[in-house]
Amino acid sequence: MNFKKLLFIIVLCYLIIPKSFSQTTFNAEYVLGKTSPANEFFPELKTNQTLSISVGKKHFSEEAWVQSLQNPETGILFQYSNYGNNEFVGSSYSVMPYLEVPLFNSKTKKLHLNSAIGASYFDKNFDDGKNWQNKAISTKITWAYRMFLYYSLFSNNSFNTRASLGYSHHSNGHVKWPNQGLNTFSIGLNFKFNSKPIETITSSIDNIDTKPKSFYHFKAGIGQQSLYRLENSRKEVYSTSFAYGKIYKNTYKIGIGLFYKFYENYYDYIKDEKYLVNEDYPNLKKNPFYNSSAYGLFINGEILMNHFAFEAEIGINIDKPFYKIDYRLNNEIYVPETDNYKPSELDNYYWFKRFISGKLGLKYYLLNTKNFPKHNFSIGAYICSNLGQADYSEISMGYTYIIH
Image 1 (cartoon, helix red, strand yellow):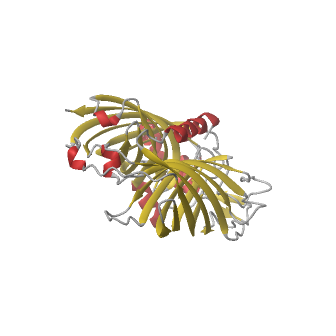
Image 2 (cartoon, one colour; image 1 turned 90 degrees about the vertical axis):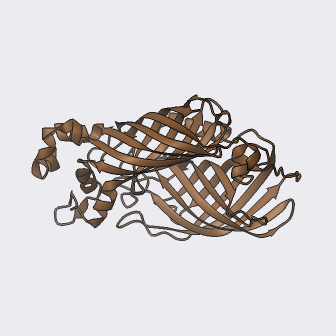
């Protein structure tokens, strides 16, 4: 991820708080966690310690998304994490826009779900000489994602003490190898401070135009990916997709569709007739363009908040011929006898990763979605994955046509 992409995300962090009747909130949180080893020979880690502060807006208005999400909270979260090994893993500093919603439609609303996605800076990185054990992080700037559950222990109009339980992930989106990523599970305490209490608007969602609307959506994206240890330069991934779906309660946008992706790294590896192509998969040379592509089906969902949206997608690769090589290269095995690496073999895990793709990101719409504009344009930033492991990072442009 380069500086321009980071700047784009930080701008989104500032803009993601939609304008509506709201109450300012401040959060402070301290959690202890366990970070999983990212690879064999990974440095020993002590307890993960994370401190975060955030400023947000709890929304009270008659807008459809506010009523549908039961007066959600949006804001910006700043997070410091120490991973229990200052010499080889170090610390991360994160900035993330977040969305917090109550779970279950109850008056007490004791349980909340908080999701955030943004960027992190790491002060220790993989180094082939001095820090070869840490294959988790190889760039200063990475994607950051977290999902936490909060349960209210004690609250009044201005203060709320909550137990927190959650998961966080850091990855550079496969723009540089190695990129095993860091995964942490945590438990701790969250302290929420509310500004002057305001009266909640209780307008019924039935009074708002929430009739489902059908839509068509076209998206074109360009991403960056590095292939593996010996092919560690960033090359482009081009993608297009087409979807049909429905918008429910002017908040939930659900679509199904088709996608196509072309990987420059795959194409160059085939055209240059590298080792695995010549030795094990010579048939890929017969149609390098097709075999450097991925084709599939997907279902995605968005939470619409006026101009902004959180988006998640899961897909099925109908065909991705080169991925067998990608998988073997990214899971190379070190051979002490030869002091070298050899490609891994295909195992059962490969067959799951071969078929499952995903995307997670943020989107900005040119026109306010609450007005159901017939034509709308959007820009988004995404981390794309194979069964949860980063595949590439992408920025895309989209066009939505709503059928009135």
